[in-house]
Amino acid sequence: MNTHIRPAATVILIRESLDGFEIFMVKRSTRSAFGSLYVFPGGKIDAEDSSPAIYKHCEGLSDDQASSKLGLQSDGLAYWVACIRECFEEAGILLTNKHDALLQDLSKLDEYRQQLNSGELTFNDICLKHDLHLRANNIVPCAHWITPEIEPKRFDTRFFIAKVHAEQLGIHDGFELTESFWISPARALQKYHDGEMNMIMPTIKNLMKLNEFSSRDEAFNYFQHIEDGGIPAILPKFIKKDGEWIGFLPGEEGYEDA
Image 1 (cartoon, helix red, strand yellow):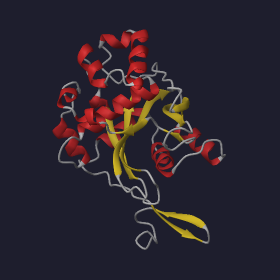
Image 2 (cartoon, rainbow, N blue to C red):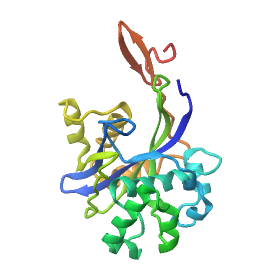
Image 3 (cartoon, rainbow, N blue to C red):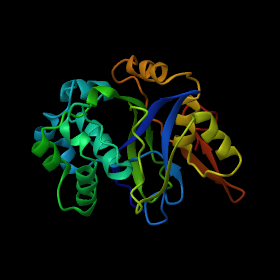
Image 4 (cartoon, helix red, strand yellow):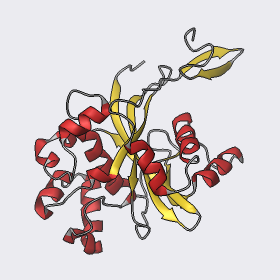
């Protein structure tokens, strides 16, 4: 079994709506990791995400500050960069300052997105060419999950929420993702319980937490004020009993024995 754990970042886009707020969800294709599941945009940290050159484009957040928030020694800001890059690659939403000229050129944005996904250029190339101001200060960590040992592919994933404007629609890439939509946490949970949306535990737990809030800003402010390093890592454990897998979370009875 491959026990290598890859660092990854997942971003929960959150926007205001008439009934409170909505989050952006996607469905992964059968060709990608976690195929056919409904998730949030995200992926593994790339080497260039921790480039000092790209850190210079992050608005309102230094690497020292980001690392402190995550309880890391360095390169915490790479997770913010990965959130922004993956969001653009997978959802077509570029989390950059609204005054950046590139945001006004939709055809160029789509062209860059295709080139980025095909490997013709890097996200750093785009940032440098257009002097982008990445909205790192509009993104806050909200959860930390580690893939259980029973899985062949394992990720150490930091989850973040990012405030976006209501007019930012988002669209899936058509390859790794086959569906995308805005939905309230309560509605997403209902669809999960009705068997209409297949999800894994981290997605469900994040939706349950977000469902406790009544507005986008209330949710964002809650996570923004969590103390540095204050989000614990959650490593689910599983045991097989009578032919079925039973899962445990930290703190639950049986977890230490699993």
